[in-house]
Length: 188
Image (cartoon, rainbow, N blue to C red):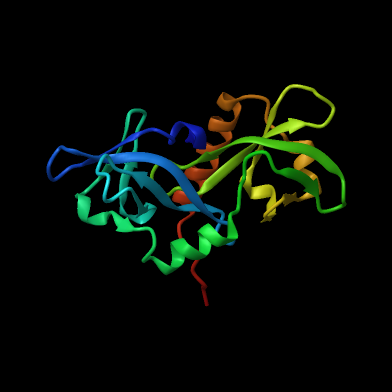
C-alpha cells in the first residue's frame, strides 16, 4: 500500500532499456472503479511534454521508481479517449468533503492509499471536522467518489483505523481471505 502523494515526482523507468522515460506529475482517478487508471508523465523532451501511462501497463510502483516494460506504454495524453474523459471529470480525492449516507459530515480527505500493483484505492485519510487526529477509512466503506464529496457508509464511523500499521494489518487480512476463498462454486 502507498499513499498517493508518494507517486508524485517518482521516476518512470523502462525495464527494456534501464532508462528514465519521465516523472510522474499527476494521476487520473476513475471514480466508478475506485482506482487510479492513468499516471500523467512529464518528460525532459521539450517537444513532447506530457504523456499518460495506463496503470495496467505499470509493473510496480516502488519507493523510488515506477517500473514499466518499455517506453512504448507512454501515450500522448491528447489521444487517449478514456484519459481525456477522466481529465474532464477531474475527480480529486484529496481535500474532498466526506459525508455518510445518513448525511453526517465527517471531515475532509487528506491523502489516499493505493495498491502498488493494481492501483485500487484502498483507503482514505480522514481529517476529522472536530480537529482530532487523522484516521483511515478503508475503501470498502466508500459508496461513491464524487467531484466534491465522497459518500461513505454510516458504519465507517465505527470502523475508523488509527494508524497505517492498523490499516496494513486489516488490509492484509482481507487480501488473505479473498485469496483463500477463491471463486465461489455452485454445488448441486
